[in-house]
Image (cartoon, rainbow, N blue to C red; front, side, top):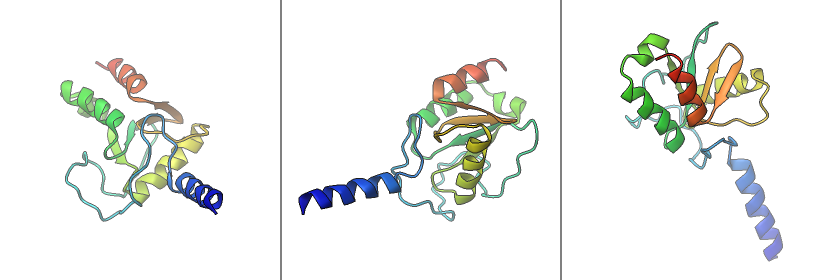
Length: 138
């Protein structure tokens, strides 16, 4: 009976992990689109439109790698405005998750990970690669 229990627990963990992430796992509870923790960056209303040329930062609440990118943005005031960066949370925002998975598929990636920077069918994943990409705009 112990082996069956272990297998069931392992299967449950795999199924509930949600996003397989390059740096941050989705160990958070099921997303709640009505959650408002006050800690979310701007543009997390849940209704998103991404147009050609838009630069989108997909992030997850509680993700330390996402926080590294956020700190870089805070240390470079005006960069977000200059780039017209859109931020979309994906752990708790169901609309954000859906859009994120669409963009991951569009980029041809087999795994979804935050932080992810998206623009016109190109995805950059991981805090350091994203920061390096953003530095090009300084």
